[in-house]
Length: 81
Image (cartoon, rainbow, N blue to C red):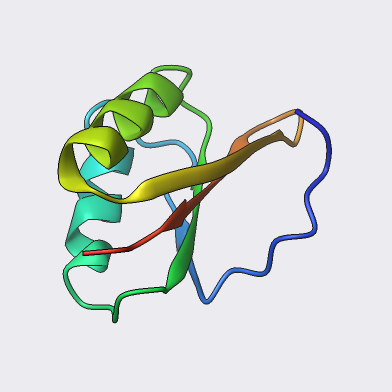
């Protein structure tokens, strides 16, 4: 996907973490923020995007965008619950 204009309220750096580490870090942070918060999850693990997409759908949150930074991805998730 192209670069994004989204602004993150919280950034979670999980670059270098193996599955399911990035998702678990996102879930842990999601519990501590208010509804409407946008979290940017940074991950270099290629399995993170499908994991986050599935979790977002099941949990009622929204995966807003995924940006390929070359050495990692930025996944923007709005916490809605």
